[in-house]
Amino acid sequence: MIKIGIEVSRRKLLCDLLENPGRYFFILSEGGRAALCIQTCDFQGDDIKTHIINGFALNKDGKLCPIFDDGINDSILNGCKWEKRTPDGRDYPISSKLEDTLCRLPDLMCWIISKVLTGGRNLVIYHPKINA
Image (spheres, rainbow, N blue to C red):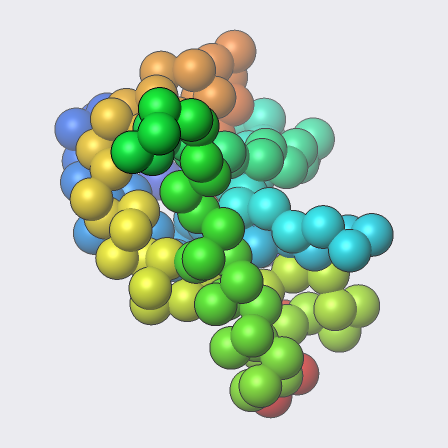
């Protein structure tokens, strides 16, 4: 494994997260459940941790509803259809539908930068080993 580190400003990282969410986000599927995730590592590129990203919005009845479920399902269906998943079948790249959703959520990206990237944590660029 080759480890590289690129220093960028928070503003540039925010722009890249919004313009290229597929570079960082992926779908993790385990035990019949799936979630939108990102990974972080320490300053040396070690100690990789997976973070589940949930998003909710109020529906017309005032109840909280998940906003990523359709995109997660779409990503898994695309992954199964085209066999775009890792050899162990656990993670999938996000679909273009989910990318479009994430591109419209700058507050979520700001939250990730300010709350997930703390204590020297860095984002890991997602690169699936695809079976296609």
